[in-house]
Image 1 (spheres, rainbow, N blue to C red):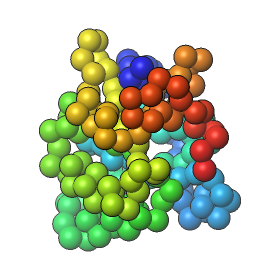
Image 2 (image 1 turned 120 degrees about the vertical axis):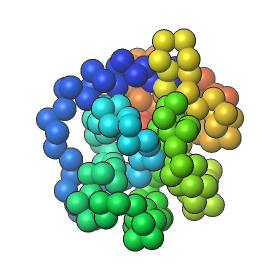
Image 3 (image 1 turned 90 degrees about the horizontal axis):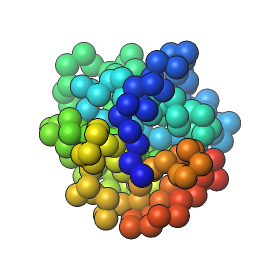
Length: 169
């Protein structure tokens, strides 16, 4: 089932706000890494996703947490984003109404598709009340959803049986 925005907001509050400072260190330690595509308007939801993924043993790159990013998006921004997408293990698309309306998110998933599809590209659908966001992508890509035991799982397109994220590498 899609991840509830209420649950993500709760998870964000539970954060110790500690983000891995060096993804290259995580990669050297063979820790699973991911690029998180998202809308900046969803900052609190992003922190919740980062916390949930960290509990599953993953380390996540978020562009606004990167002090080396330009303050205003430009060509350097695009080049850094492309490099991160290529270098990290997985590409994750946090599907919300904001990311669906974003100018950057479709560009990022379009760039990631030939580099990460099909095994390393996932949509994280969300729901807010009765609305599920990301439905147009759900049949194209794998997804990360909540499993029946409450843990995050990796699901194939259209599948209701998911693999615990801790089992992916």
